[in-house]
Image 1 (cartoon, rainbow, N blue to C red):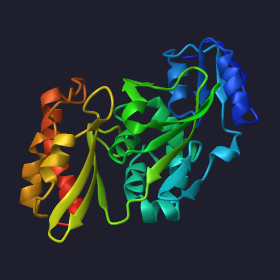
Image 2 (cartoon, helix red, strand yellow; image 1 turned 90 degrees about the vertical axis):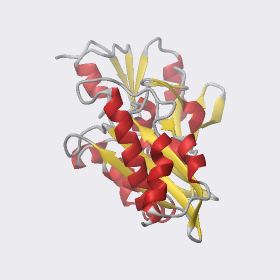
Image 3 (cartoon, helix red, strand yellow; image 1 turned 45 degrees about the horizontal axis):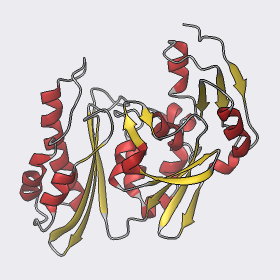
Length: 283
């Protein structure tokens, strides 16, 4: 299909992008365009203006920000998964990014675009939620920080207002933690039926702390806090971690669709969480 008519603006800096967005009634921000373009083609989105951020090079790259890594919103998936600081300090992000779509999409799609799109079947929102990432947002009133637990509001909906631009995401350095992203999909490079982002910190032979984020188990990414609590003090054994994972689907509202029934997704959440925990713990 052919998109509906819209104006196109390519700002020179973030301040100009914010001004343009604030003056529009129904704008859309384009980062890599891998999510927005299909919406436009199938007329699932009718913006009056598309604001293209691809020229804002200051929003690209990974920098050391004390106890966190600051990843520019326009950093491509390929750049994230190949960055040595991400590999060293936040490998869960690198692992999940490797499962996003295919190489062509990863070279064009961006971290910020994926997170702002907020598809609950996307791989990266669950990682951001599990790791308590911080979202740096610029708007008419300046820059503010939004916690991952507050950023995702509903299906394809975030806390971002019309005049807001997501500029960066700050991920904690995960020294002393081991991580694994487990994804089940119908085919390679497809959306996750269910995905699990798991991080564990071991103390001797037991789990001192765990963080679990679930993909495609509701209208937003889900934090499996029941599992996190159940893991605390558990021996780092596969059977014990599988038992702790039995509450993974508690409080979730997985979709029924052509790919899987809700009860099947609940089963997958329990199985994949146990598997992700065991692999993160190295057992």
